[in-house]
Image 1 (tube, rainbow, N blue to C red):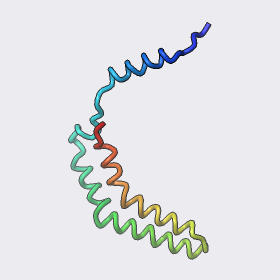
Image 2 (spheres, rainbow, N blue to C red):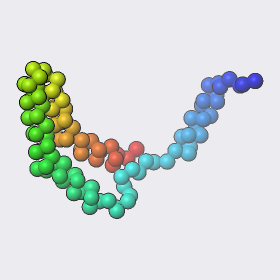
Image 3 (cartoon, rainbow, N blue to C red):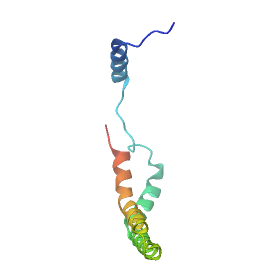
Image 4 (cartoon, rainbow, N blue to C red):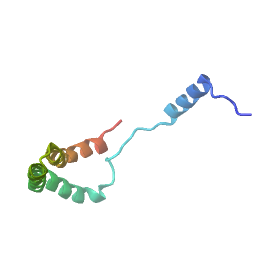
Length: 98
């Protein structure tokens, strides 16, 4: 016969998890890929990223005019925003310390 889980069981499990929990140190070790990361990050934030963002926006406008729909323009704007903001978001997520 299965035993029901009580609030006390949940509190014990939570207490054990808090005791055993360690700090998160994502992105603070492993310097093997720093050169590659710096290169790709520089490309994404530099001229290449701007060219990709502008090209995606222009292709979205052209597709929107051809289809007579705003959806393609919104897609172009979304891709341009993703290329522009994603490197900073990834950097903040990976290097965040809890």
